[in-house]
Length: 404
Image 1 (tube, rainbow, N blue to C red):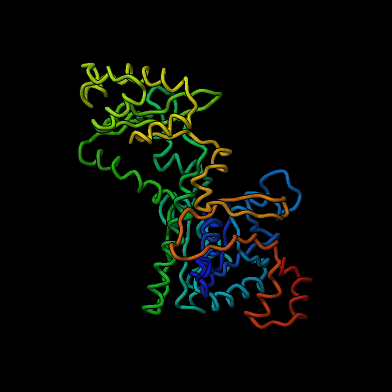
Image 2: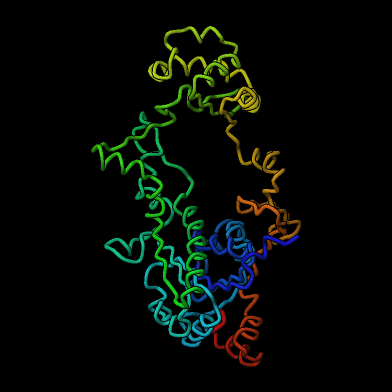
């Protein structure tokens, strides 16, 4: 059976990436067969995630490993004239460039779009800056949380009774960026092969994130309303929320929208008399008396384990789920059934399991993921096989700190 991991075989990507969005975009491409060459230097330009955690070796940071699985490593000092020259030569052998540096960093090194396309007119360039490469805020510093706030997510991801936005530890702009980046890269590659012309994609993470709030903008544009945080409430469902369960810090979610779901839910919790209660006679009435209804639901959920509640609701056709922790996810039978995790028996940080991409190619097998290459491990092979340099020249460049 053909392996899904080879589906992008033959595509070569030069990756100037750091942090989350750019490296993870490279990982997705590499995990499905693209040759992704990550370019870094100890002279400036190391991935910031190499310094996350308590490790001593820059190759041992768990967050770096997670985001760079399957990626090759080329250590080149881009500030050295020879280093920049080698990158231009590699651009002539590549299909695409992926980068999430601040705007114009590569331009100042003689590696801007025009410099690279002089050697490869078909080159696709994908940029993942926080605010985009143009505009009055394009030079703003970005680090996950301020992008989440700027995009509108932090404000809306909140409860109306809170006196300030709480937000989430999830860096949603990065997550959207590393999905949209490879998607647009592949679309641009198809165009490049059809037309013979390269294209640059300017993927501002704030725009990618703000775009998912389409209804919010529509309400303001059409009605003049400025949507407020709604917490766990929803105008078209009741009960609808997160409810405490038996045990320490255990929770479940329940959402009842239709009359059929409401009837089934009343039977599940053993409260058939609620069906004749005028406070809950219609969805509108249930939404209006949400507080009384939530108190009834909590009385039922607090006496039961969250998994039991999920199973009983689901068996009755009522959308419900336990609120899973990281430990729950690792043991979850649904994820296990779908081979969601890729195991590593040996690594610099010991054995571990890590999530795959989150989708499957039906009819194709997926091989185990590969660890990232150690820093600079592919220097000699890349410079020899792709650019034709001999070992003596490479050793000379190492002494001159071109390759570091």
